[in-house]
Length: 266
Picture (tube, rainbow, N blue to C red):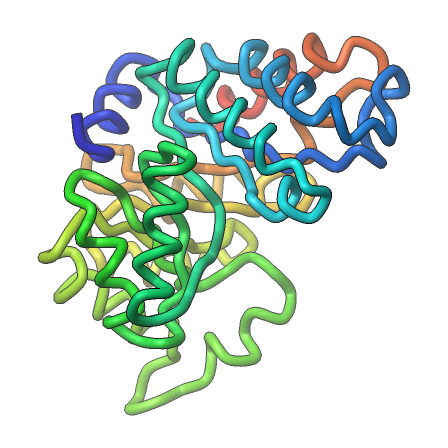
């Protein structure tokens, strides 16, 4: 099945819009595992198994693995998700952005090495930096549009030809990139009014929405402003608020936090 087919089936089966972001920081691990880089895969796999019933997707962030030389543990995690939770889409949060052969290699890394169903990319270098990812039929490509961080407006809100840059990205995604593959956009929960404007531009396109949880995004506002015409179209990510919900029984804490977060996204 393609990424979007898998995602639509997952939405239909669970009704959940929640994505659990897997951003493992050993400094923040529960006391039994704290500062143990070798426990990254174990920690993430326990989180995955504890929260799977409540999610529409999982999203490992590659930097948390690569920075400590834990790429093999990321491979182990991705393999576990594919083998044990095959109906749940796997999104690799890599934010790649380069051209030519380099972009093609980044696409191979995401889709062949890690077996991801989708990947996040930056549009700053233009369409030819995105096309190598779109060349992988049936894979999803989430393009950064209006991100959740405080400084995102420094460039994304700059007006060009009468529109902020992020709206140009949304328009290009809807009118061009989406005709070449399974494209979505990354739009932060911390900017609900701009999320609404992006939804108006792109129609029913899938939006990956970080910023709920530790960053303070409002789940109700996200659903109100971001849902598509059938009340879906959103992958709402929460990471730290779920991963580190308990310092004792971390899997149980994540289970309860994921259940509560999923229930808030209605």
